[in-house]
Amino acid sequence: MTTTSAAPGRRTDEQIPDTMRAAVLFGPGDIRVVDKPVPRPGPDEVLVKVAMCGMCGTDLKIYDGHFPGTPPYGEYTPGHEWTGTVFAVGETVDEVAPGDRVCIEAHHGCGRCDNCLVGLYTACLNYGNRAKGHRASGMTTDGGFAQYALHNVASVYKMPESVSFKDAVLITTAGTGLYGLDATGGYVAGDNVVIFGPGPVGLMTVQACKQLGARNVILVGTRPSRLEMGRRLGADHVVNSREADVVETVRKLTGGGADLVIETSGATVTPQQCVETVRRGGKILFVAFYPEPVTFDLTAAVRNDVTMYTTRGEGGNNVKRAVALAEMGRLRGEELVTHEFPLDDIAEALRVVRERDGDPLKVVIAF
Image (spheres, rainbow, N blue to C red):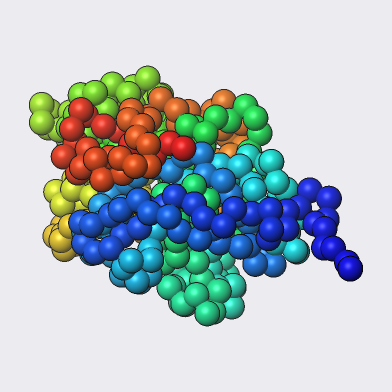
């Protein structure tokens, strides 16, 4: 009789639990915590014991049934901002090992389409096609609202002990801002930067811009508590758009307009304000999703030779850069976590996010 043993540091299938507790979406607005089989890692996959999973507006779209490409109801576990400890790895994985603390990049491209081959894997042409290798954790595949989650090793990043799980749950968010900055040229030293939207993406981008040498970072929003958080995290100026003329204030603070304007809010009125606050020859970056089509003066942008960029997600290996900045203490995510819920209370957590009950900033499910 022969027995099969795992290689040093690995676990066999027999050592992986059979079932776990997981949130499963059974239909729009119907999420339940049930027992579900623990997935087994394929050759290039990592099984992570989840410590924490954040929530954002995308989760509300998924919860309401307004997100394309999700797995079937009754099977699907959402959650795309998760972090935890490696529990088991596939046979080819040597980049991480059981016991390593990790965070993830939600997107993993197919690796074979034209976009992936030039590094644009968040715009993978096989988006949602699992058979061809695409994965978007918590969106087109099961995600992190569960005790265990599976992801491709290429989108898993090892973290040092100095980075807490609360910091880590915001690292994916920081990667979104860094990817946008990367797309615009990646060089903001000495620039005046305006950021619309003091949500998690905006607040992490405030920190990134200051660490990359921006001269003045101006944060624009409507909620005083979030603007004050932005000031604590490094914003040089904050502008409450309910109390001040945004365009006039920004143009005065920048001497005629910002070098770079970043729109993270998703408010339909802000694209026009972006056009009016950027300097001639400046840049505008859009990273938000909008509830409906927006209108703004494109002629003014053309007349002023403004360059506009859009980016989706956290591509370009920028989560790795975010981990490095967090390790050096230059990105702080923990301060943004305002609400923690156990998995069994996930429906209540989603309600708090939707209704903004208790002025939430980042709501997380903690295990």
